[in-house]
Structure formats: structure tokens, C-alpha cells
Image (cartoon, protein in one colour):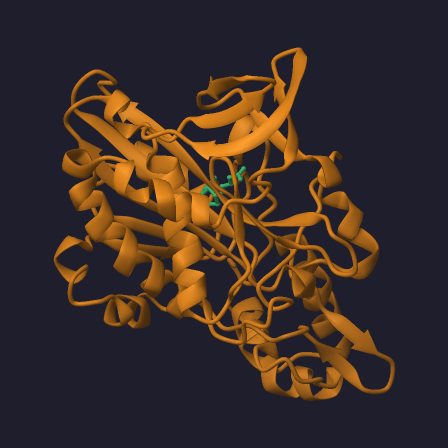
Length: 336
Ligand code: BTN
């Protein structure tokens, strides 16, 4: 936010309660018309403001900004030695892009309240409205090339699901490799809660810089007005609907407490210890699925994953192995 009175306006509305135009104007030293203009400009930052005639304005659910100090203090003793620079931006193009282009070190973390060009897997964009969800990236260096990293994106998914379970959100499932899914309201389909995007820089056969990006819908429903929800291309859920009442700082601290020690051990240990943990929380296991490869669709029964994290699909009497990137998996009930 460039203008200081916009920042002040946000502070006043952060409690989520209704404030009259008059009260806001008095606090900001401006007319009600000027307040209204500032409120309109919040929309361009993706901030939803509700109004009731004769009552006033509010930000549904309020705002609770990310706090780097709280996050750092919440990280476990085991993970403390690995945490590096923790940057929190109000607005950034993409937290992944920031760590990729900066001189980042292993353990550096980037968070943002909002991303202007957040990116998802398979070239999709990642809808990143202000102040309600989690957009976070972590940098780590590996010195044996990218091939060692097979399975890392599944590890990220496992650690996210386990972090959420520890914070009381059970029932989150993983769609290969690391889409976080929850059951939709009222039917048996899944909707997306979040996902991970791993990007690599440097020497792909030797010293490489890996950026692990995570997007998690915390209170998406408060960030998108009811009439605009269809704009998000994939069916989505959020943690509030799953009963999570906690803050984003706690979520980040819990996830970093698990991720950083795991990254430290990953090059030596690899994926195999995560195989059963991934399968335990897999969506569609034992069910018919279709796999969308470039230009063709294959179907079979989802068995689980291999020791390196590849997807195992039974087709008749054969087991087929599908590796990263180009595969998209959809359960029969979710074929949209
Ligand atoms: C997916 O498509 O499921 C992965 C989404 C990953 C989004 C996160 S948000 C933080 C980080 N920065 C980005 O630009 N993308 C990732």
C-alpha cells in the first residue's frame, strides 16, 4: 500500500467490525466522500469491503497481518538452526520468483500478503488475494543435481497434511503429487485447499537452488465476494470451512518446523521413508482414475506411489509408472 492513509484505513478496519463513514473520516481527518474513495481503492488490492447503508463498512473476517517475529518464535527448537532470512511482503509478484532471483541461502523464507502474478503448476496462475491466505516459499540448495529431488514435491504435500492435522484439521487428502484436497460441501467430490510448486535454478546436474512454494487457502471465502467466486477456475475450499480458527503465523511456524529438518535430511534419506506417509493420506487410492497426459487420457486404478514417488496405476494385469510434471490425475467423481 503506497498511501499512508490507506494503511491507516486498513488498521481501522482490521477488527472486522462495522465502522461508519463518519467515524472513519474523523479518525483519518477527511470527509466521508474521501473515505469512500479510499474504500473503493481497496478493491484494486483485492480487499473485499462490505457495506450496509446507515451502518458502515467492514472487512469480513478482519485482517491479521503476517508477523515475522511471531513466526520465527513459533518454529520448533529442532528447526531453529535451519531458518534463515524471513521476508514478509505486503505485495510481491511471486514469492517463488523473489527467492529464485535473489541471492538467497538455504533456509530463507519469503511470505506475502498478496501476489500479483502468483503461479501454480502446469503454467496456471495462482489466485492470491490480499491478507487471507498463505503464499510462502522456502529456498534450499542441493549439491547432487535435480535427479535427487524426485519425490520432494510429495514430501512437501505430506508435511503440509501432517502440519494441518497437528493443528486440528483432519481429513485433508493428497492428489498426486501434492495437491491438497478436502471434501466439497454436500457431495462426495473433492475441492482444492492448496498445493505446492517446486522450481529449480542453478546447475541442474550439480549445485542447484530449489525453491519450494506453497499456496494454502486459509480464508478464501472472506476474500472473494459471493458473485465473483466462479472466477477461480478450480473448485476450492479453505481452512475456515474445515473449522480452523487459528492464525496464519501458527500455520507457517508449524510447517517450517517440519519442512526445514526434512530438507536438511532429504539428500541423504530420499523419499522412501515418506512413501507410506504419502499413501496413508492419498485421495483416490484403490479407485478408478483418469490420467491426462499431453493429448491423451489413460485410465486405471490408483495403487499408490513407488519408492521414488512416481505414481503407480494398475491397468488390467499391468502396473504402469507415471513420473512428474505432465500427468494430471482426476478421480472419477471429480472429472471436471
Ligand atoms: C499448484 O498449482 O497447486 C501449486 C500452487 C503454488 C502456489 C504458491 S503461492 C506461493 C508460491 N509463489 C508462487 O508464485 N507460487 C507458489
